[in-house]
Image 1 (spheres, rainbow, N blue to C red):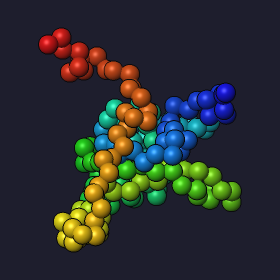
Image 2 (image 1 turned 45 degrees about the vertical axis):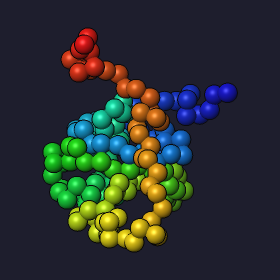
Image 3 (image 1 turned 180 degrees about the vertical axis):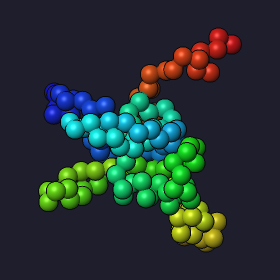
Length: 150
């Protein structure tokens, strides 16, 4: 049965695309592109193996800056982050939005490294949800290594 999200697909990543999961994604690049009806230039972050880009807002841009340890978007390539959906207030109305968490502890995000925690209190980690599991396989680019016939 169709729902509103499938009737009006978006070229940008939306909270509903996550399907209640929290995928781990790797930043590929950040581009500045026209977005919305007014075609305003905005930063869009693209991830490896994900077809859609995530239009950055200040909250998510600041979070990636914290996790990456740099505000220079060219230095974000290769940084892994976890996406999740949560309710936020937008123009006075509750709406679902994508937010970002670190995948693991690092010096730049202020969390304690897992190896510092006593082993008896730390449950076995679950394997991260991979972006492919949720978003499907993105269109392949010409010259992809997977095209090599051997």
